[in-house]
Length: 592
Image (cartoon, rainbow, N blue to C red):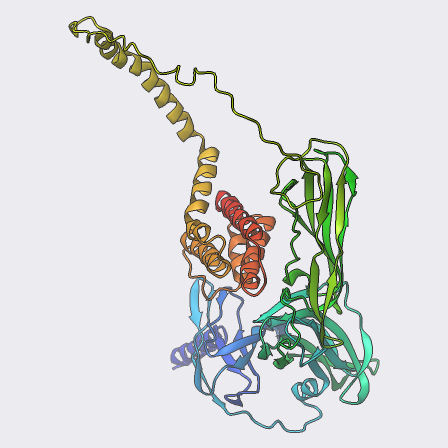
């Protein structure tokens, strides 16, 4: 009987020790029922440390926080207690029953899985007015605001959007990240750099107990009339909220809550420019401008050069209209103008100057007028059109040959005289009267020039073939050179349609943008139609393409979108084509 008793005790001890050493890996949620406007916390807990933790995909949720890792261990009566936790904060995307699949981890050579957790997501719930609830405190004390300078601008009139994050004095923000970025469809846009975030005191809805920081400043020029929507900026913010707990010195302890805040979408009602009083030469300039035509000199000798600069300065949509063209007499040789821009963008919009510089070389002596040209723009402050003329400029060519042609419209004296044609009786001397005909050579082919040529030509072709073969091997061995030639050929193939459409703005930029997307589709094996520029930049960076080439590629894509709504010259289209070909070639050489 004693032996049976000892065996029973031994079995009980072994069973207890095995149970105490059992490994557990569980998924625990903060609640199994929540509103779509609430947050869910899920903890993956284990009592033994493991490796290769793989969370579920969280389909139906957006991860707004985590993973946060915590480890705790203690000793009680000689027994060690260990717990490791991976925590995530989730925001539901839809209503209904949502399953959170299994997480896995390797512990002591075995793979352990959590159970599937089902959560019931209901319609938005009204949160209880609980002053101790950290999430409620965060909701009441943090706000993202988009301040728009003007909600009813004219077409091509500048407006600004300033995004401010307001936080009450009792709470704090430790971090944030952008979730949704506005794309500003139907606007020309430019972000203004912010050097350092400056915390300022401010008022929100009449409450002065707030601080704010300016996160982003953007200048917009509407390119369409009617109702245009500015998409919202959305942030995931880590908010520090005070609790009722205090430290050993009596100070209140803080807890962190992840909060999603959005500035909301804004609607802009864009007015069309008035038709009444619109000048015929109006090219879309909106703002407050000055116009000048300036020449480097007005007196020179023939074959010397001078510069004539057509310039617009002021504040407005300087990048979005064309300058008027100079009209010059035919006797002045004129080169294609060089376009220059000196523009700064701030909260008032674009300001600075744009100019076209013409190089002019007179061929003959005389006085040549540069006719007056005019520039028209719409001033949104006075809501009226204004026209400025340059005035006539006369170029005086002091020394040089005299133009004897009457075709020029100038002030040069024209001396023209007719000369008599003198006949010397030999005008038909080139006609031969003696044909000097000879019979056709009837000698045999053997040992003739043709015979020896056909005999020796194959022998001469052998060294030529050897040289060609050697050059071909060298060319094939030139990996870098072949890559350059292949990249250049590839760029021309993808840009073939765009080249055919040169001179037709809409068709050209559609073809150019399509060529850029087709190139990425072929080289990266992806569909780019739904890709943002940030994703394209990320993919090219992973392929080890240098930053300058990536940025140039993105700039060309953005310019393709902008160019459809702005005046573009054939020269600018050719420049954009050359840039695209060069950029595709560079990227293709660097792709890994």
